[in-house]
Length: 188
Image (cartoon, rainbow, N blue to C red; front, side, top):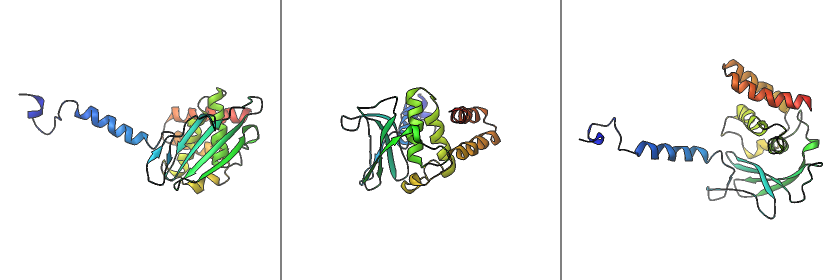
C-alpha cells in the first residue's frame, strides 16, 4: 500500500511541493518589478537600451513603478529616470535628482527613487526594502493606489510610525531594520 491510499490527510507525493511553489509564485507576482497592462496581466519592466539600468521596481493595486539609472549617469550628480504606469498602461515619466529629495516632504515616487539609489549604491543597503515596508504599513500591502504615489508625505514620520508598530508587536528585528534607515537619514 502506498501513502496515497491511506486517506485524505496524505496528499500524492510531490503535490504539496508543486502547490507550494505555485502559491509562492502567485504571491510573488504582487512583489516583482512589474506593471499591470490594460488586459490585467503583469509585464516586467527591466533594464533596456532606451531607459537604462533598472535599480528599483515595484507594483501596487493599480500601478507599476521603475527607477532607471540612465546611460549618462554621474554618481556625483545622481539623477534617475522614474517611470510610473497606471492600470490603463499610461506612463508618467520624471527625472529625480536624489540629492534634492526632501525626506520630510516628498511624494512616494521621489522617495522610492532615493531609497533605490541608497540600496543600489551600497550607502544604505536596506533602504529600499525599509521604505517599501513603511509605505505598506500605512496603506496595507495591496491598498496603495496610483493616486497615492503623488501625495506629499513626511517620510521621517512614516518611518517612525513603522518602527513603533514593529516595537509594539515585539518584532525587534523589524524595528532595527527601520531604525538603520532612519539613522542613515538623520545623519545625512
